[in-house]
Length: 82
Picture 1 (cartoon, rainbow, N blue to C red):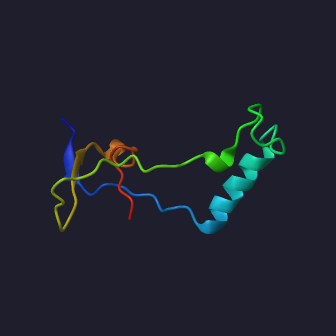
Picture 2: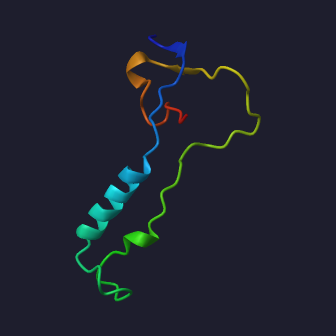
C-alpha cells in the first residue's frame, strides 16, 4: 500500500564552521555564561550530541535498502549518514 524498497535518504554532516557557528549561538543565548557552576545558566559545553542510529548486529555489505513510502525517505528514522 504505497511502500517500495529504495535507497534511504541522507543528510551531510555539519562542517567545522557550522559547528562553531552553533556553539557561538548557544553561548550568545546563555543568560548566565560567565557564572560557571552556579546552576542558574545552562552550560552548553556539557551538551553531548549523539547519533540515534541503532546498532546493527549483522552488518550487511553492499547496497542498503529500506521499505518506506516516497514521502518518508528523508524522515529521521529512515535516512542514513554517508
